[in-house]
Length: 323
Ligand SMILES: [Zn+2]
Image (cartoon, rainbow, N blue to C red; front, side, top):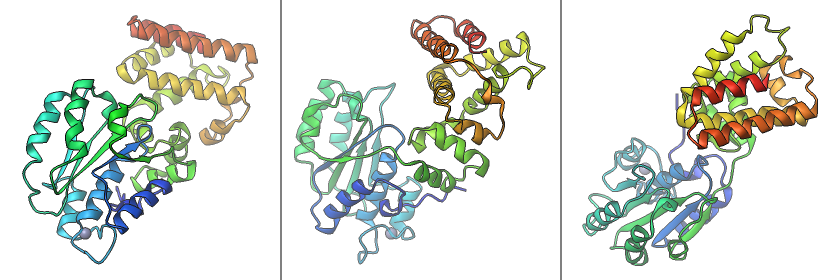
């Protein structure tokens, strides 16, 4: 069961973000806009909702969200009339979305003191869309707070950043990621592996869990490792796995990253994944040259996928090279 806390102060990790937000709230000095900057899946959306809930909680004596008043309940179910989330449509925040938003926020909030508008992934905005937002960002109608989110690795339109208070979001530690996965109800036996694979992004870990990716990855590794351990491995098995991989479509790139992680582990002889797997099949002794050749094969597969080559074929070739 998902028992993720509502209030941003109770979410795990992101201590710096918590401090910055807490200071603004305690002094009653909210800026017109925040920009939450950090890589995908590190909690920007949850913190935006948690901050919105804290600002509008009916329990006015506390700085934070009680989690049980009528306002908090609506935030928890993402059903609050004064909480708007704008997301990219087909990968882009469009100018029409911004124009519509500007129109809507000229009306006062329905029931709370502050309407909170989250505009996700502003790095996907084109210049015209960003320009149409500037004036509102500088001087939003009373009773509105804008929270923009952006990935730190992407170029963010400097004009937007300069008009907001920047709040940095960091990758989470392994312990924090594991804690968050447990809170989200992930089964105990998967928590450690997902945390290891997610690079400090619990959102990515949850995505890995939802897709078949980790299962396929595990199957491939078991299959291409020592044939003595898996005597039933044959060409048919590899072709079947290649087909499963190809069916991942847009997630194939993430799958290749998982393979890189596995090879890196073998190169560094960290054997961490071995321990997590609870098996010694990963101890197959490939030489460094062989491991580097496998990394190159992964790179080549990535390039071929980018050129829109036949996915099935690319996966088949890769799997034969990985064994
Ligand atoms: Zn409340």
